[in-house]
Image (tube, rainbow, N blue to C red):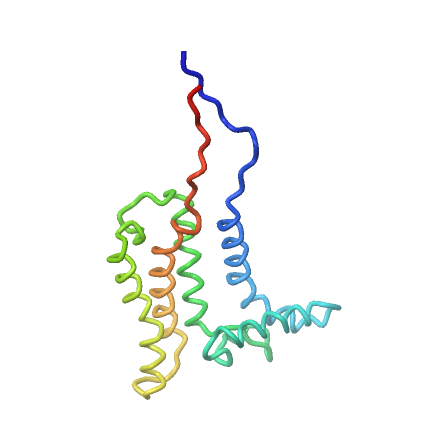
Length: 172
């Protein structure tokens, strides 16, 4: 007679947990920073300063953020926030599909990495076009380029970050 034993201990995928924690910060931090800064309530402006500090170090054009609580702007530009939105969409998609589907790029090895890398170039190519004067900054223009980059990045990395290989099923 075969008996299946399931481990009763709680198993935590720490990589997944940390990645989700960081994603929550990237999704909520930039748009709430202006409201925290404008509040004037105790420590909230200091928290906003931390968010702005991080935004200034990851965003190439943080001064182009949306004007959400004048005179305070969003902590990153919409190109960066488009990237974060793409990551959020792919995280939600991974939660629904469990990493099953042809669109998860990591399953294709180096070919998937190459395709993801090409698609992730949407962000820097748009930024370069702006710097070289092909067009000027426009939130409606830059957001989709960031979104494409975030989707490509997420379609490659979400199964790697959130994949779970820890089922403890044993025959005794």
